[in-house]
Image (cartoon, rainbow, N blue to C red; front, side, top):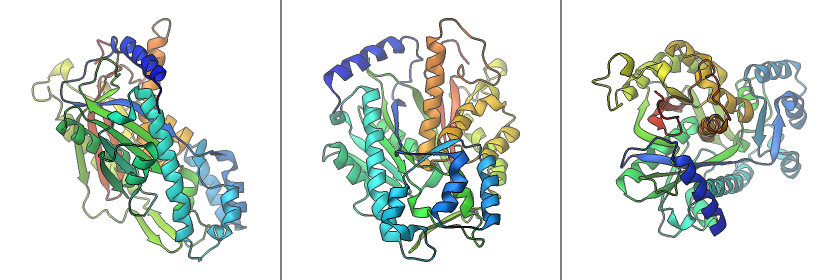
Length: 421
């Protein structure tokens, strides 16, 4: 539980910081706090190839060379994973081809995602400064478990939430799940005045761990790119004087692209989840992202009347984008004409944590908050870095997942300095 001293200390800090923050619109959902958690196993990208080949007893030089190339192109430097030497010693069948191991995988995953989601939620609650008893709704997102009752109930029990807490679970939404969860939390918060919604995301790659095969070269992409962890956010409208709103979630949009459902394909089997990522994914996102962004931008309150310097243009916006991979980010930059610095928070999250599926958008937003904090606490104003986005009030929170599904939120960065765009 959060102590009274923690609440008082956090409230005092929030009051001081609120003075320099932009005010949210009445009745609009805001992110009031963020939190994260990771498993203990930290993986350095430089050691992935040797470790994975050893753990799976694979001696294929071509597969080893391909994995080495992929590990370099992902731009990932570190990741956290649940899988460990201890787990493989207890379950050696996980590293063998063709054995029915789904039960073992789910036993490991179900426990891990609940533990990580609990830790991330408690970190978020502490940052918020409120009490768990004030949480009225729980939105839980995971593509890493399969059980009922679902992980939403297990998380509610682990946190000690009220039996009357209203729960929603989003399952198998993949990389778009974090923004989908924010969209659902926004709707709940705005439809229930006074509500405080806890969003938790939690993912692990245990279900997809298996030895490499020349017949499944795309498996190596996951080995080189994906990570595990959890994220959390508290969402509510009309913040109190003790709360520190970080982002206003102004308008949300979801869209699926017809006839693309096979591009991101995952199926549960007796051997675990079989996952395939189409090479055409970055090109499909590139072809459709601008029309999606334009529709969101039209939700800006001044869109119809905006002219000249008042127009909301890409260079005057911040961009919080789920980093599905470096190719997706690069294609977006090219199509939208973004300076490389606009996606700095996304590239940093990818570098430090890999693609952690639904969690990753939380890490991107945390990076943006930290950048704003550092600028605020700087002893003297520093020149704005080229392509920087700290001073942009309006922007987009974006993610792309199975479907192909686009999730987007037109948002305001309430930590932007007064007088920013």
